[in-house]
Length: 146
Image (cartoon, rainbow, N blue to C red; front, top):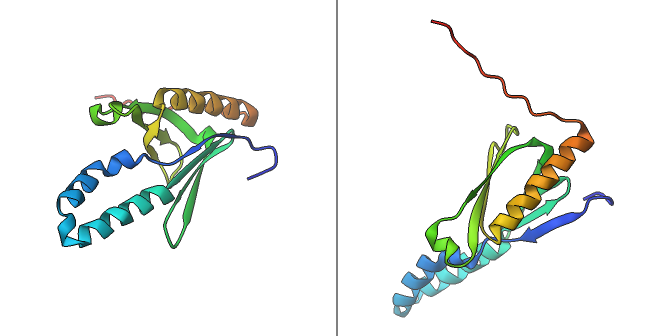
């Protein structure tokens, strides 16, 4: 991260994404193995991190071996908010970022809190970054004549 790069938001997916697993493991706790599986799912979700700055989005995952992917904000073409009923009950939502990046054409920020506010922050930061870099979005569509 460069010195002038400012963090807009950091977080990880909510543990609510594991609710079904936790309930099933709770019912089968007497088998012991499900308890360890539930603990593992908690650790994996806890180690999944999103970091959004005014220049890029970083996604870090992994418990023992870490992997970090970066996406430049000026490459974001569309930001879609998806609020499934189960997540909305907990004030959570998913944010889909459709991009012009060849390696990550679709990036989903899963089960994030206050998704509407985060979506707006991403949209504003994306537009600001495009202006700084002098990038314009251009869609090219082919029309075939009969």
